[in-house]
Length: 290
Image (cartoon, rainbow, N blue to C red; front, side, top):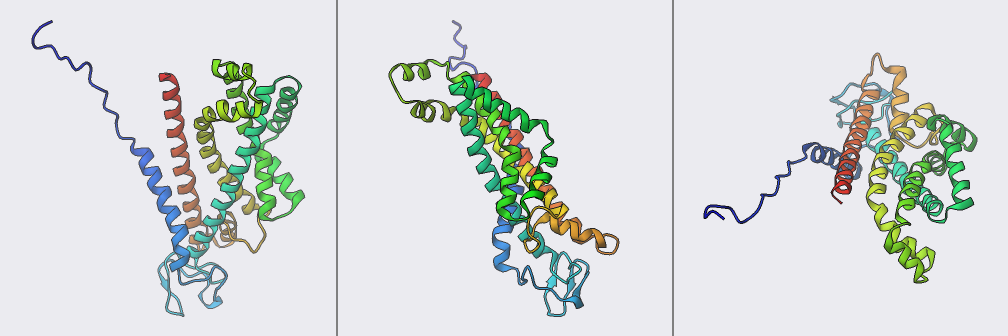
């Protein structure tokens, strides 16, 4: 060995900063902070409006001395307040739908993958039936049957998207149930529910988190689409889709009613999508290293 040879081994590759991930997290965090804190400091009520201040452009000083940063709508309501409250509704619906879809889909998928046999066949056929119909068309039909309400909207979203989590859970469980530690636990007499909880579910956390992030963005868009059509939430509940829909009638003279809530919706969906894509890439690279 030559005297000048380096004994420290090859240097660790420098991991580049993932700017897209941090920018996406920053945008989502900023929007979330505005949604949480803005109602505490905004001087407007989401229902209050003055017909004397209707269709005022952004930056207008209203008759009561307040400033409408994003203008007012056809009822004289502040568009910024409508957008913030609509964002809160969209996030609430998407969060509940994501959690319920993850629980229902994962439970059915893991059950099908671990038990196999007729249970797997029945759940797989149910997944195939749901996948035959376009998600938005199925959501419109179910929403029309159930009627507008927040609970019904969450049921609609879960009914159309639980299959995504079920497919991930089933495919991963089919692979995991053949691993040595799972078969060993079964041979030792460990109950099946405990085997699933201890030896299967922890390995599903990564892919399920990635899918949940992407589905959250899909739920936001679906909720906005249904509210835009007037079949998602009750008329008294604010949402981004409803505000955008109401602004269509005045798009020529008051573009800001639809434009600014639409931009907020786009920023939310894009930032969540970027986070989901980065989580997916990290999960795939980690699995390849293993």
